[in-house]
Every structure is written in C-alpha cells, then in structure tokens.
Image 1 (cartoon, rainbow, N blue to C red):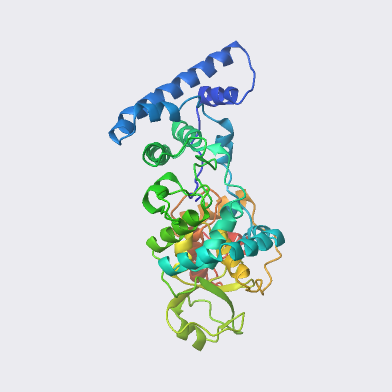
Image 2 (image 1 turned 60 degrees about the horizontal axis):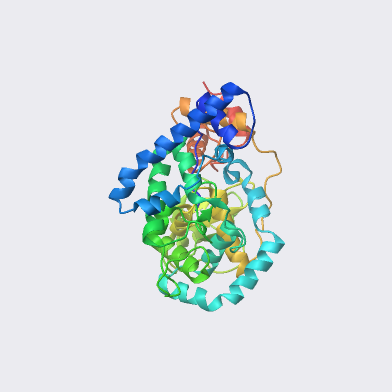
Length: 407
C-alpha cells in the first residue's frame, strides 16, 4: 500500500555522504569520519526509539533483534524522488500495468482462489474484481512482494528526515507487529517504503485492518492468500466501500455535451445523453462524477464514491484506474474504447510552472512538485471555467499557454 509521496527533504552533506559509504562507496579519510558520524547518529536515533517502543509493549529482546545489523540504506533515499503513477501519462501507466501476462496470471489466480474470493465478497461486500485488481497491481498476485527488510526501510526514512514523523510512527508500529504477532524478522519484507505482504500494507494498516482470513489464528498477509484477500477487502470496506455500487465505467458523451456538468445521479447523466461504452444499462441508483483523465478528447468515465475508496489505498488516479480496469478485464470486461491523446505530456518543468501559475492566480493550494493529482485537476478546471475554456480539468500545453497569457 503505497502512501502519497512528496519531495524529499534535503539531507545534510555529512549524512548523505555517510549513507553513500554505507552503500559501499569508498572515499578518503575525511569521508570515513563522515561515515562514522552518520553511523553514530543512526545508533543514537535507534536508542531514542527504545523508551516509546517499551511503552508500547515491545520487549528488549524483540527490539534488539529487530535492529540487529540494521544500517541506513542510501538506495531508499533515491527512490523517494520517484513514483511512476504520478509522473507518467495515465494511459502509459494503465497500458503498462494491464499486460497480457498479468491478465493471464490474474485469470488463473481468480479461478484457483474462487472459493476464497467468494467468501471475501460475501463477508465484506467488496467485489472480487477489485480485490484481484489490488493484488495484481501491488505484487502481481504475490509474485513479488518486496525484498527489503521493513525495519531497515522505515528506520532509513525516519532517520533521514523524509516525512520523519509519519515513518517514525510506522517504524514503532512495525516493532509492535514483531512483538504481538510473533512474526519472524526474516518474513517481514516489503517495499522501500515499508509496505508489506501480498497487497502491500503499511504497518499501521496491518494493525487496523489485517484479518485472519483462513481462521488459523494468525494474521499472515505475507504467505496466506486468504488472509491477504480478506484484509484487503476489510480495509476497503472500512474506508467506506458501498456494496452494490460499481467503482464506475467508461461512457460515451453526446455531441455538444456541456462539460460544466460534473456530479449528478445516474438518471440525470442518462437524460443528458451519456451511455455506457459497454452497452449495459446505467445503475438504477447512485451518483457519479465525470472523470476525463485524458481531457475532453480522450476516454470519459463516470466514477462513484467507491472509486475514491480505491484511492485511499494509493491517491494516484493512474493507480486507481489501473486497479479498477484490471479487475474489470479479469472479469471479462472490454478494453478502454476511446483513444487516448496523442500530444506529448508536459515535462516536469512545465508541470511545475503550471502549478506555480495556478497558485499565483489563487486557483491552487498544494505542493508545486510537478505531480498532478485531484488538487491540480480541480484547479485547472476552475481556471478553465473562469477563462471560458472547455472545463475538462486536463493540464496540457494549451492550458499552460493560456496561463502564461493571463496577468
């Protein structure tokens, strides 16, 4: 379960140098001193965790074993600067994620675990398609759950000041898992951000939402598929998943459609001339928002509150669309019908410039990091409405050009 990422805080020269040496880079005598200073600082950081860990019920033996041989990992710092679902065009991310091989393996796993998925569906009200979509997107159905020791990953991030409070809390929670769940440290592997198991739970999510799906008395999201599936469904239900309501679907817009409409009930959308791309009937109840991830000239979707629930797993629209569309395809759904835009995406400098200009005009409040999410889309849409443009919320060069011309 990847958390929303922000720009990495600048590291001190001595610390970064020390971490580089930890990774195996050999430098001169002064650099050795920097390495020693970094290692000493890390040990002080670890020692500073002990009083709170003890207060949470972690034993000295568990604490010592958890940190045995642990050093900061410089490779993790580099990874904080990247998150593909925020920096690639959404269509590239979706097309790359929903490969022929992933579909083939997903259908095999859906058949193999059909009984378990049925139980999960009945218990939590979350469709098997969505659970399979998360499983497939996160770890390719458990084939790659990560190989980084969670304590090392989390302590590196907390120590170096990257979202320090968040990762310090996750680190302390991970220690509680080792103590309370009797998980061996050799099993507690995951991603560079500390997400673990078949569907990549952060430690805090494990403590709140992991369940014993196969009723063997253990919450094992690492090697038990029933536990991982049930835990994922439990998480989504607790985040507000509404049983019986679809996440959404692709739609065809009528000619001359008024893009000022954004959120209506399904009957109202149908009255405006929208039709499902798969030819099926609109749901009888519920409301949905119009989502145009590629702008007015790309595919159009109606998305419900359940789509937003998927985004609590990962706030990227590319990720949420990937999960939802993968799940649909595994259940026999068709590929996205409309063509994606052909013009190139704005580069990073242009994306940052666009956010900065929107902020100066009072449309945007958020990080000007070049990563586009719902806040940027809303700001673009409001700017388009003000300027009399098609309000599709799509940030392309035409919007940037209009911003540059606005004083």
